Image (cartoon, rainbow, N blue to C red):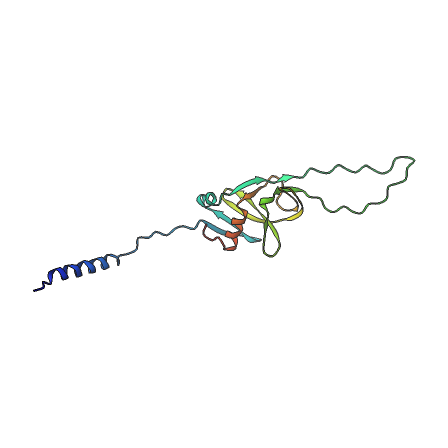
Amino acid sequence: MITRKPLLAVAAMAVGAALAGCGGSSERSIPPASKLVAVPGNPAAKIVLTAQAAEDIGVQTATVRRVAAPAAPKAGATAGTRAPAPRAPRPPAATAIIPFASVVYAPSGKTYAFTSPAPLTFTEVPITIDHISGNSVYLLKGPRAGAKVVSVGAEELFGVQTGVLAQT
């Protein structure tokens, strides 16, 4: 004769195991690693990272350098010589230098760099490039000399800003 006690014991264990999985979830939510903060008068929001996110990305900054002013041209002709021919106006000269790694090219073709006005805070700044020499980019427009510009992690910040890397 088959006893039902072993079958009842197995059934009770199966029901107990199933009910144990039905309890409330104890998962804690993970805070975002970054947030975008609107800046009045600027279409690009500033990015604020957590310290862990900045470390994960490996963000580093460099100081924007000033371009040395070119030597002033000599004043007019000396006595007994002909006056020099008038020159065409010079194009604007570069005013600042940033590392090549700081340049971000948007799909639209526009160029940007990210400055760091405060710790863990980054702001997109449109730039106009005069020329590139080695790892140095000479700017006609962009962040002022002395500003901190992101030199490592700029692409990742662009991804955070555009939503590609919303969770770093």
